[in-house]
Length: 228
Image (cartoon, rainbow, N blue to C red):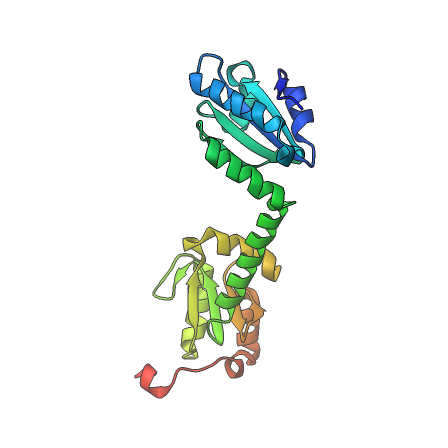
């Protein structure tokens, strides 16, 4: 095996779309550290333990579009890619770090998908915990003392009118929750009211239930000590 020189954007795109691990060194011929990295990569191509890795190098200044798109700010920079996705990187001539990362990603057959799954799973778990933080949870803009939109102000007024025992979460303070909850509950707007972990709905539905008289009996009430 050799270290492939990539001289066009098409060559780069074709090289990194492989499902195998690709290691690409962005270098400059005038930088001594880059020469050292090229020597390390050349040695790696001769080792049995790296037989499933593809090695390449790109003269960063000759392919500025690729360099900018790949976030290359300095040379040497080494990218680790699979299926055209950057899964890791090493900035600078750090052979031990490069060796460790290559070994790590060879063990993990699909790290990118695994990371995405873990992120999604952890967000879902976090949303479930927030929704079940109290029997009555309100996700709103601002907080009950200082609502940040008219809809949130109105729903707080309705809940307070019934002396409802509820907790709230300010979705303006956490964009991950704000966007994630929309998808999790399949409800695109705020505020959102939950009872015992189940979505009741937004302001329109709460107002309808209030007007029909069915809302009050569903809401947990503050005890007398709290209301004094």
